[in-house]
Image (cartoon, rainbow, N blue to C red; front, top):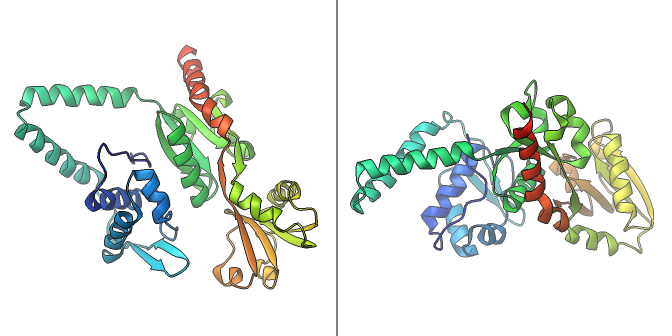
Length: 311
């Protein structure tokens, strides 16, 4: 079971702390191979640190062959061919370190056993929620948003990796963006255990769309025609000109080369060589609607209460 994606510190974290957190995320697949790490500034804000310390921690990841920084593009997670991490071994090391510190502080073995048992009871009683998305980048961002807006354990699940799983048997509730509800309907037995997430486009992307008001035409891109129609509807609220569309699952993305403006969602998967041939690429990032986020904990509690009330 992987650790939650958001980690807090009582004191300002050291380089060692940040390196451990980021490495754990890479090993757990929260930052999968090929994905781009959040910016140093974003990580610093999340983890209560500063950009310089985060940059040093990322430097250690790079020295260990875990990531590579590309100038003006960002830091990317590298493929690693070593054997999968032994989660029990990693946890044992951290646990022994903590127990040794407790013994130095004078905590007896009996007291330690009681503390561990109480902590295990709390962890076992903690509700678990799956967050489902169709691509790694959006999955990471939505998972972090749900984690921050709730007090429960959140686990990321990619749509393409669900297979024959029954998610509401593994988890107490399943959180999914409202436009993916049909995609998860076959992976749950009780739709009352599904939390539909109200996501909105990040204001930074919308401001870029508004700034294009004097342009005559742009192209929106999504994996499938249904997604293209949805993107046209969204972009059309901010852009008055002609909006053409391209679905990457059924059309050649190379057709985008030479386009002055292309608006994409993160599921589109445009090849890097095609991106380089587009004059201006606007990526739509998603975030939880602020009013919805404020109500999310109540909706989670209601879903869990309904689960408990059923025989």
